Each structure stands twice: as structure tokens, then as C-alpha cells.
Image 1 (cartoon, helix red, strand yellow):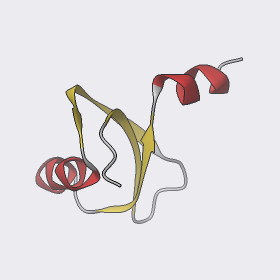
Image 2 (cartoon, rainbow, N blue to C red; image 1 turned 45 degrees about the vertical axis):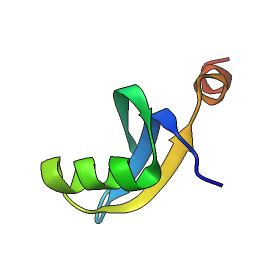
Image 3 (cartoon, rainbow, N blue to C red; image 1 turned 135 degrees about the vertical axis):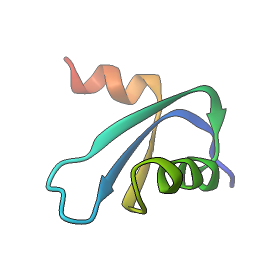
Length: 59
């Protein structure tokens, strides 16, 4: 199954905590990874998130 999300969490090598990146349109993991490689570096880990996941973290 191909997952498309607007919000992704990623962690670069040497980082303890994940960071988030958001896109205007929903993108696949391959598209998110390609963008991250061209801007900040190769992500060690990448997680898809949706709006419900983010809201649950803040409650």
C-alpha cells in the first residue's frame, strides 16, 4: 500500500529527536525522502503522520 501524507517525521543520523516536515500536497515516502535528501540530508528514519496522530500528541 502506498501511503500519501502531508506531514512526515524524520530523524537524521546523530539526532536524538525527530523533526517534522509538512507539504502543501500529500506525498509518498519516496517523494518526502527525495526532498529531504536535497535539502537537509539523507534521513535515517522516516514516519508518516496524519492529523489525528498530531492531535493525540497534544492532548
